[in-house]
Image 1 (tube, one colour):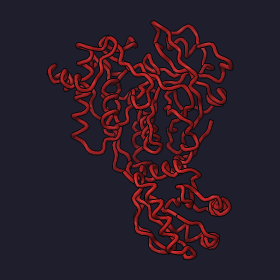
Image 2 (cartoon, one colour; image 1 turned 90 degrees about the horizontal axis):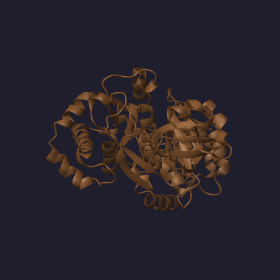
Image 3 (cartoon, one colour; image 1 turned 120 degrees about the horizontal axis):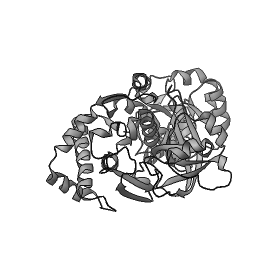
Image 4 (tube, one colour; image 1 turned 45 degrees about the vertical axis):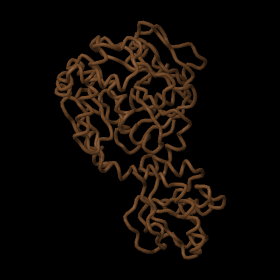
Length: 430
């Protein structure tokens, strides 16, 4: 979906120059935006996602109230390079200080992020998450009815709940021959994941895909995979990976709709993949170590500023499009059927953004981090965990919202801050 932008012209701007700049921008952002017919400031504004200001002349100082009445976010993209001009800082600062909702991105990728985020605001009103679970669990906010209601009220996005046990029954009913044909087309066999173990995972994928195709607007999926593992002899990890790869559907473990929404917002606006996992700050000490059945955290300098990323035995449900290595392996956790599968994936070492929506949906946590390496503990519940360094581990412990965190590779906090502002989220930095 592209952002619908209405270009707005000041009377002081010459029509020829305005059209020339507009032509340049339309070419630069053909993949992100649809440009509506231009409107002169003070004229009637059509339905759109944002207004585009190709010029910010001195006239802007005198037309603050009219700019406010536009009623849309204003994107000041005033250079030929898809970003703001060198000379817009004072005007932009003045206008924002007077309450004008103005954005002046300083590089072309920030402009693209803004446009994708503007389109996302409209897209969410027609989107849905499909969650398979039979009974909400206690203790985590995403299982509360209030959470689904708030998501609908805040963003317009619907959450559809369906029976996980019924889905698993439909998967078991799929003939082996059909599953073999699908497996042959889609999966490179690695490790011990073949035979009946692979067929069970493929059947669950087929059942999920068939249901998704019966519905409209499914943007993300999840299921209560751990707490309701009794309904199946497999796990949804491979199904999630294939649906993400083939259909771009966002996926999440344990039916965590807050993490799923975090992924959906970030991936849609930034344009790259992410994953959610458990975070174990080293400051948690034995509470974290014992949970993962490991002897100790890895030895590092400044351990108070480090954390381990691990979920269901491995670093997380890492999508193939951001993975440096990706292997389907037999399950690790004892609570799952021995026939189940897990993804052992890695992403390249380097910069990360950690993020998570707050339960009130009025803010999100944004934290830069660095992936420094991996820790493997044979025979434990941490066969491969990502070791990350954060700016201040003590501050993270005070601010973090959940044991689930979303991870996006790259130095992306500045981009995510802009997304948060456009969506009306307070950026809580750490």
